[in-house]
Image 1: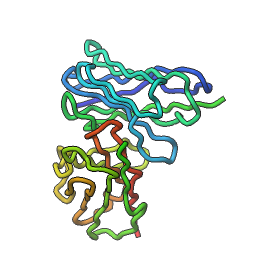
Image 2: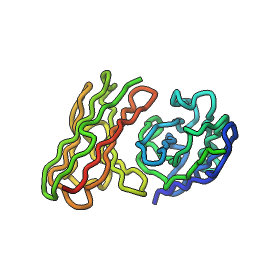
Image 3: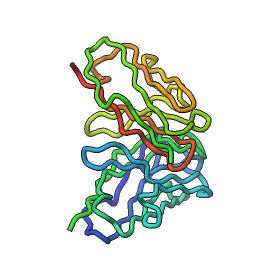
Length: 120
Length: 108
């Protein structure tokens, strides 16, 4: 069974940093692209970032480009999102989602999300 | 950036009804790389359809997707109580891989 467990969320002040992690199990992690999608309270889904299976291709939303960095460690079955220079508008539940295959960028399986709150 | 528009914003329907949801793109979606998701309150999204018309694993055939270019449709043939939710489309043909704003289907 595919499992994705996000961690690392919490309360941070504007301008601060957080690192989110997503631990994967139940599938061969290194074979699949991975994605981060967020959802602000009461709002819709917003795609944040995607990374191909071997990290050769990385994509970011304009709203986070230059502030967020996605990475993965296939040996540890883990996906990461380093978030710097955080703003109030980054407050959201952050989901990690597995792609369909190596270079697909829609979420087939999703974690339950981790809440990031940016507030002073 | 491809902007996706979903209409209507909210639909109030009764169980048993057929529903058609629209997703319109500001420019042509490469290779019909469009997905549909369902999300219920407090839950993560669930993939329903990918590549515009292919049902995801374990998705019942009451859900169907169609379309190409800039116009896409998700149809639920007969609404059941568990289908009342928010539905999102997402294009993944060109980065940024944008979502539409969602259509809420609620009980009349």
